[in-house]
Length: 75
Image 1: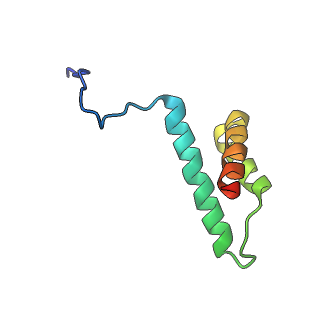
Image 2: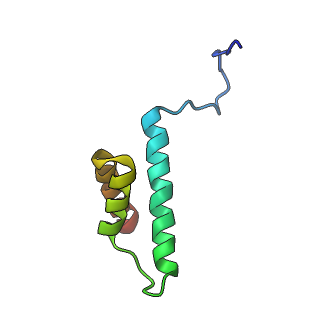
């Protein structure tokens, strides 16, 4: 199969592997936050979310997740 990489449309964006993983981490964060809000305690802990991210994606993504959560909560 031949893949034509002559993409000229302005709406096309090719994601890097890191961007894909970061988007997966963001999705996980939002899922865990929503899950926490729907729980009997009606809340979530950043430490729990970071531990889950670290287990699934590694420590470097946990650092990314921490910054993402802080930015999301401040804004």
